[in-house]
Every structure is written in structure tokens, then in C-alpha cells.
Length: 219
Image (tube, rainbow, N blue to C red):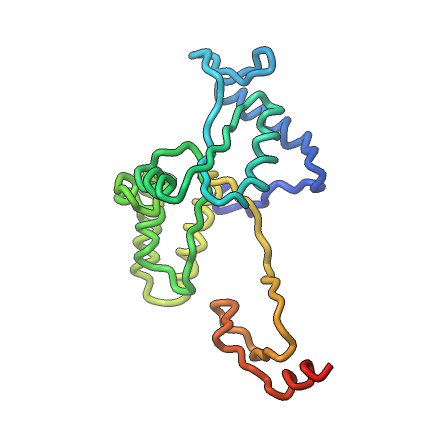
């Protein structure tokens, strides 16, 4: 499945009423040994309720986390939103003291050694590492080494695609959102090059057009 099937994320109508997703979630929880008892998702063996904490520091995270918590509640799962200050957040993340949190792994145009820090087994137990997921997988370690040792752009691309597929299909994370465009408002007197750098938006390449600025001021 990992190398023969293209991963496609779930698609909904955006209404917030995702019945099919809830049914799939209930099925997976049942397969994992849970059952609904009086509306509460309960472990069949221990009798404990399925609950966990979402740790965050930025209040803007609530617009994504709150609907997620509401959807889980419909399945009898309790997700507590825990907002902490920056120092607490850093300390808890560095010590892997959390159930769920938002993480970003920024990538370069030429991935390399940093992948060990992101997904490597050696980083899983290093406080403060970027492997906050705690991944310990020899197969992933081997792919990372292929990325680092790649002798050509073709080898690098193939190894990166392999790593991407393995990470996606193991469901280590819950993707939040994606937008293929950057929406930026600018004054008409600010000009920018027609060709955008591969690294994305670069405001340092913009320039001030004195003629256009004069036209605007004269209005």
C-alpha cells in the first residue's frame, strides 16, 4: 500500500457534519479495543475512558482544535484544550510532556542531515529534538541515510518521495490544513519581480516605485 497506492486525505463538504468520518473513526476505535459505554469511549480491557490533552500556546490554534474536539466528543472521546504560556510550552515540548500538539517541520529544497533530527530513532529520546512524534523505525532511518548519501538529484528525489510516503501512511500526524497560495496585500507603489524565487515570498526583493507613489499621493 505504501508504494503502490497514492495517499488521498479525507474529503468533506466543509459543513462540519462528517458522518462518514465519524463512522470510520468508530470502526477503527472498535478494532483497537474500544467500545461506547453510555456515550463514553471506553477501553474494553481497562475500563478507562479515552481522553487526551491538546497542548497549545497560540490562541489562533483554537479555531482548528475546537471543531476537532467537538467531532471527537460525538464519538465519546474527550480532548481537553490546554493553553499554556510560551515558557511552559517550550519546556513541555522539549521534554515530550504532551499528548497532542501542533508541530511544523520546515523543509529545504535540498533535504539532508536535518531529517535525522526530524524523524530519526536517535533523536526520539533527545530532549529538545524535533522528533516530537517519537518515531523509532529502522526503515525510516535507512531511507534518511539514503537521502543524505544521494549522489544525484534523481536519487535525492526518489529517497525523499519514499520517506514522504512512509511518514504519511503510518499516520503519525493529523494534517491540519494546506493552501497552495500566499495571500499578501501590498501598496500599489511597491513593485516585485515577475519571477518568484523557489523559496517562496521574498519581500526583500521588492522595491519602491517613486512615480507610482506620487500618483497615489496626488489622488
